[in-house]
Image (cartoon, rainbow, N blue to C red; front, side):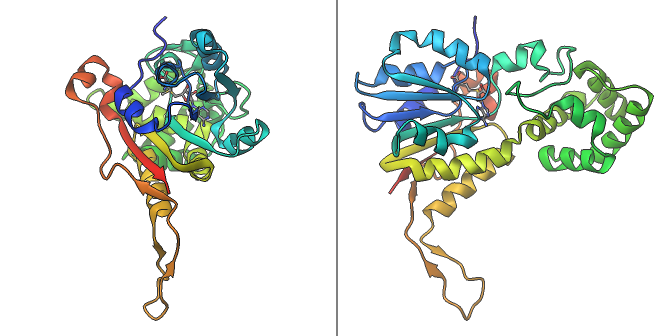
Length: 307
Ligand SMILES: C[S@@+](CC[C@H](N)C(=O)[O-])C[C@H]1O[C@@H](n2cnc3c(N)ncnc32)[C@H](O)[C@@H]1O
């Protein structure tokens, strides 16, 4: 089965691996494509911890990576638990950490996960099946105001208010059960011309809310920077501007040499920077990678090194 094609693979390897016998973390294991390539580049003393919130990803990757059983450990968890999970394993420092954000092709294509408007399945969108909030609850229970706020904040969808209004009107007649039901409501509100863009924005917004993706990313980045050893690297691939902005900001703050006082009369506070930014501008996929893997089209890679 083709679970997921790793994006910007050579760029990840070149930026992430600084010591072939080091201790690495793949915080978004998915189908293990990046993880396998990382392990192939390590010596026998090199190790990798693979984390994913989705048990299917852990299961798939543990089979795929069975040849590296001595060097790899799997953690089925949200990456917002990074620090405590690594602490429990006795790891105080790591050599490198990769975040390849969002969902895998498998998650999108598997109807039972309820992520995609391309199939008609129960509204779910939880990466972790144990999570208490799902897309059904958001669509059927959030107030109109809250729905419109989710759409606006997480997708910058111009028609957020109108969409929230029609959803609330429709669910008063009958619950909105499936991705297909929701897609038809969106189509009724925005028409055919801009439907695909509107659908991907709305589905993205609900997915971000279900999985609290932006908050988790902020927490994990702070912890990742703390956990890196001197010279260790953090590499992040993001797929939309909200994520990329968080990564850019987190790196900028950690690389800062002073904190502005905000008052002309008070001097700025001098601080010791924790990071050196390695990618002034984010790295994007080449045209040929984009042709072969459409998912790579929106990818932006940023990397930084611990000082
Ligand atoms: C784009 S895929 C990674 C693909 C992987 N690099 C590969 O080569 O197959 C993202 C994966 O990260 C996981 N994920 C996303 N957010 C997560 C989080 N907060 N905690 C743990 N896993 C997360 C998803 O479940 C998904 O399997």
